Length: 352
Image (cartoon, rainbow, N blue to C red):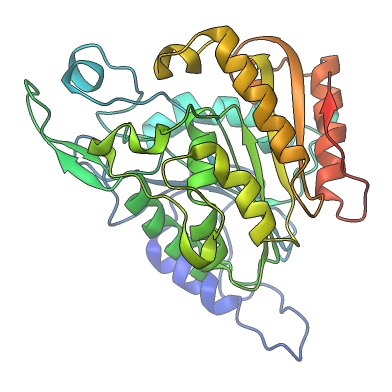
């Protein structure tokens, strides 16, 4: 079922959510979602895909509308950095726009049946099955982190690398719509994983009273990766929001965020051998596998014991994307994520 939610509806949602610290959370009043536990598309003004067209979000409201958990899932889909990879032999998806049609026909089936964190299928034991969910589409070729408009040499037109500014518009709308949220889980796989890591601070700032956690599947970087593509003008966490983040070094961010946010949990997931990222980053599979191994050691040893890893033996890219529903890996991952979500549990790194 497709349902169009207007901006006015989100305003009503925000109004219905108003409550005082001295009173219990009020039941929904003015805002009545047209559907629960299903995905709906919402256009968002101020957003731009790579071709300059606007995009939006998809939102899945749980039937218990007063639930205080929100999952934000960043879409995956490659990246591009010149005329060849953006236009003539594209290495990123949806550069010509992302609409409700794109979502319903391409993203929604995977969200409902493939990706463990976004399915409500009870047989999958998804720890977030009873959470609200927000889907962030990807159509900018910049791992959700760019803020630039550029015409590459020999390109037919400009390209809008606006992933970071798009999310600023999205998170502003979302946080004003559901301000009562107490626990937020920022997550993604592949390009969406980079987006989740890069935009963690924006989520933290949008919901200052919430505890914000991170689940990052299959995103690591060679030294200097964040500075390697200046045409994206990538946002990099720094300053008071991430004092120990190192300029240009993607692999510094998760350990640094974990230290800066000691009440939050951070989960990194990967195959032992990633068979996609090394080609993109100009290194060998073996060297990148060694990089992943050391990165996971660094995360596991982060002070505070709130950042851990889940390593899957094998050669592939994107555990959530490649995982077979109902498999032993799927079950083990669900159990591990449940321990991550339960703040009273003994959260440990695991290999399967």
